[in-house]
Every structure is written in C-alpha cells, then in structure tokens.
Image (cartoon, rainbow, N blue to C red; front, top):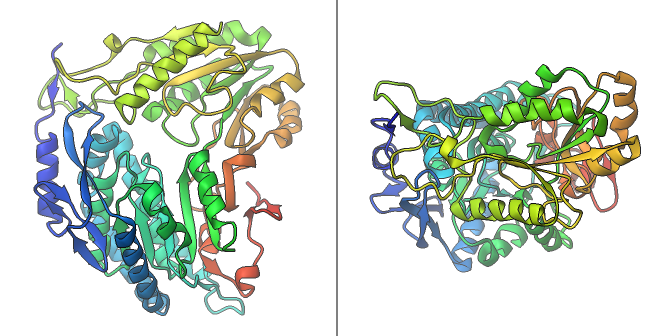
Length: 520
C-alpha cells in the first residue's frame, strides 16, 4: 500500500503556522533569540535536518559568549522585580501562559513530530503532561510555599538557568520552567542543539506574552556554558543530559555553593526471577519501546533467570515482531487519522549509524544476535530518506567491554543478560553504577522486598515499570545518575526556593557531603 504525507502536516505548512502564531519569534528563514526582554535576530543561524525525512529546516541561532553573558545579566536584573511580585499575580500570569499554550497544543505537538520524530500520540501527550502538571502546581503552590505559615518559602536570589535535553521539550523543560516562575524565579533557558528549538521558541513566545520573565537562547554548550552555569547572580542550575556533560557542569559548580539538580543518564534494568505472568510482562515490554526508548526512564537491559529464558524469549520476540514504526505522518488515505506507531526515527542519522555499529560490535565480540528487525517492516513514504530510522534489535550476553554494557543506548537496541543466582542478578542490574528506575518481574513478593533495597535505582517497580511520574510524584536518581536536589511534586518547589534556613537548608538529594532520600 502506497503511503502519502497527511495533507496539512508538511514542514512548510507547520512552519507557516508558526509564523502566523508568533511572528515576533519566527521569520521566514530563521528563528530569533529571546534575550534582553524581547526577540532579537542575534546569533548565527545553524543548519539542521529533520529526522523524519532528512530535509533541511531552520537550525538554532547560536549566540556567542558575550551575547549569552548579556542575556544572563538581563535575566538577573529581571529576577529582582519578579521575585517581589505577589504570588497571586504570578499565579495569574502562569495560568494565562498555560491557557495560551493549550490554545496552540496541536502546533506544539506537530513541531515535536518534525523536530524530534515523536509519533503524534506521544507528541500530544508531551504537551498535555506539561500543561496538566503545571495546573496541579497552580492548585498547590500556596501550600508548597507555606503561605500564611511561620515558615514561608521564598524565591532564590537569582534566576534558574536551564540546560535540558532534546527529548521532552514540553513535559520536562517547559513544565519545570513554569514551576520555577510560579515559585518566584526568573528563567534562563538554552535550547537543545539536537532538536526541540522550534517548539521551545513557540512556547516561550506565548510565555513572554503572558508577562513571564523568560530568556531563551541557542548556542554551543562548549562556548556559552560558563555564562549559563557560573555567572554571578544566578540562583540555580537545572540540567538534564548525559553523564559527561553533567560531570563538566558539576565541576564548574563545585566552588559556587549554588543550588543545582543535574539529571544524568543511567542504565535502567528489568530483572526477571521466578516469574510466570508473561502476558502482563508482554504489555510492559511493548509500551517500553515508545519513542524508540529515547527517554531517561527507558529499560534497555533485561536480566533474566536462566531457567526462564525460553518463556521470556517467546514473549519478547513476539513483542519485537509486532512493533510498529515508520514515518509519523504517513497515511494511506488523506482522510485517515495519523498513524498509531510505537516509534518513528531516532534523533538523527548519526545516532542510527552509531547504534547499528554497536549491534555489530556486540555480535563481533561473541554476543548472540537475538533479533534484528528490518526497515522493510516500517511504514514509509515512497523514496523518502530513512537514514535516521532504526528497526528494533537485541543481543544476548554482550561482553563486559561492550560500549553499551554500562550505559543506555538511547534507541531501540536492547540487551539481555542471563543469570543463575541472586547475587549475579544484583550485579547485572547494578551494572550502570546508579540509575533512575529499575523493575523486578517476580511471583515471589518476599524476593522482591528483599532485593529492592540493594538495587541502585531511585524508583523500583515490582511487576510494573517506574517512570518520571507526574504531579505529586518525586523524581531523582541514585549513584552517578543524579547530582544535587531531587525534584517532582513538592520537591521541585523546594529545590527552587529557600526555606527559613536559606542556603544551609538540607534538601532531599545527592550532594557531596550527604544523600537524603524521600519516600519513593
């Protein structure tokens, strides 16, 4: 069956809608930066291609260090006025921004499809989760700030600087920024270089119109990081990304005693031990492939009791064979709804090539190739560029020196490790030296209760996955996966405000001198 692009969803159509919705932030041939209180044509427009079909789209307009420093200085000055703004006024402006964003929900979601390859359903969910989450904070912020109590919480002494990953521009980055603003802090945000900058540009145009003190700029992290991390007058650093960049950020912060929360990658694992409910596990395995596992709480490693391997393999291969992937906007009939896919492309063609190479490296090193899907199984337009697409693949017992043995692939490449004893299970599940989540599939509740405390994961699920969570659910990481204050629920507000103890307050989190964990 020949597929075609759903009418009205082309990149040209989508960008034209951006020009109409936010002419102050978009021009016909480039994006602008939101600096010094307004949108300016500063920075060098970069080249970029969409992972969906490889065609060029406007890239991030990268500013230099001097422009970044000026933008941060302006945000610091703007913070002084915003931090003194009454809470009721802050609530009104944030609520207005949320409603403005809701009015452009479909355009924001379509930008996520084109920029970072999210299937339509998942792109809509990313926007909806951001807005629903902020509405929850609007309902709870008086309590969270201790209004009319003897211990009120106050804004930080300076704005929050946000350096986030590309995979969840709305439900992670914009959501966090709106809560930071609600708590009384101005915001500085850097767009991710790999994607999401069009979506963030539209979102911040709407936020700025609502009277919120936001700064949004693009640039090479290696060139402008000092301004975003070390500038005197900043109140906190919020970072989401890989461990290498996280370590560099933590090193830059080491002598500043500044609030920070650095979410870094971890190898999340799922153990299978004395287990029999395979239909339930199959549903979790299928859902786990959403967005090609390009999220911090994906499970790319399964640690399986050897005697259960035949039953696991039968379940697992059935799931892999049923996965649906391809062009997120390809339809057989112009009137048909957008396709229901598990995933589209990975973030760019270089990532797809890298993961194909990792698969080959594992097999060359004597791992067993359990499964290798084909792009012929995907749904694509005739003759479209498929360079950023990767069919699901999996290897059994990769060697300890495999490049992905201790880290997450951030793509649809799984690995399975067989074990015979509880100690082997623990060692294999803790291979990443700390993670955000882990899960155990078992019929033995006593076993789960016994082993869960020894897993180096912030959240542990029993016969179910764990995730970042929404609203009141807290979030953090163990070991090398997290540095600084934990977030989520009330903890996010605590992380971006001061209690009566000021800088000396002992927050939940991983710090050089201590680690303190909430119920999770």
